[in-house]
Amino acid sequence: MELRQLRYFVGVSEAGSLLKASGRLHVAQPALGQQIAALEHEVGAKLFERSSRGMALTEAGRLFLTHAKLVLMDAERARLAVRETLSAPQGDVAIGLPTTVALAATLPILLACRDRLPGVRLKLVEAYSGFLREWLLAGRLDIALLYGDAAEPGLSKRALLDDRLVLVTRNSGARTPRKLPLERLPDWPLVLPGVEHGLRRIIDDACAPQGLRLDVVAEIESLGSVKRAVEAGIGGTILPAMSVAEEVAAGRLRTIVIDSPSMSRRVVRATSVMRPATNAAVAVHALVHEVVRDMARSGAWPSRWLGGD
Image (cartoon, rainbow, N blue to C red):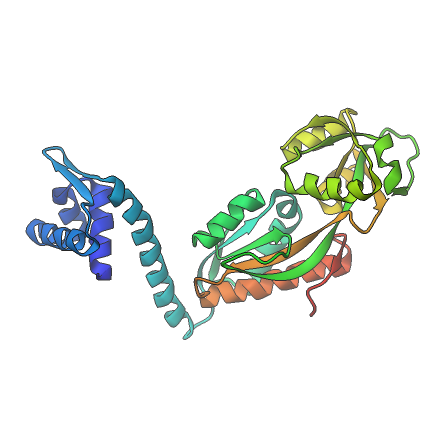
């Protein structure tokens, strides 16, 4: 199997016919058909249904297309990696960030990259951690900041910090305590994500040893909607302190420290062990590490730094 055959296969699948693909690929139609037939013979499956309307992928063809695109992507990364060793880091690098991390880290990472790595173009993807893991393993992301340092097949993780969780309340003007014992948490009506959400599991696990039953008045998955509900006085919530920094600075919300070491989330930098990083991705790995470290040490990201120098 040759890379050329994979490119032809992808080209035909996108064009929908040999005639259209031959024009786009600048390959004679008979030669293109021979290459597709040879590829089908090698994989041992029919990849296209041929008709007067053109060529449509079979079920096997759709499966093969996913793998073919990944192989071509990896080949392009290998080519760029060799070329980049001869010059300053350049090229595209995709970073995945959970929503609560993206609120604090997106702008500092972008600014640092523009300043230090002008040849690198970042693609920042904001999503739930579960999706980011899948995309990292599939090769759609080069790096992701995730929660939890438990070992996972196919991923390499480096712990960066423990993200402090705080009680977030509406700023009604009334006095609130600066610190709250964990056992007093059930006294507060709360708006939290559902029980399957990673943040909710941390909260429930922290309360379970003491048999605490929280007063959850609503379950909302959207971070923006949770914060609006708190501002409206529906209840408080529990979030990383940095995810409400803007609202606290504007005087709309307040935070109260929860006196419990269990009320924190570990943030890790994750990469795939299956695909070697390009020169640009390696440079961005180091840059993200430095940006998050500086934020933690300056207090811009209230947390306990774990990542060393």
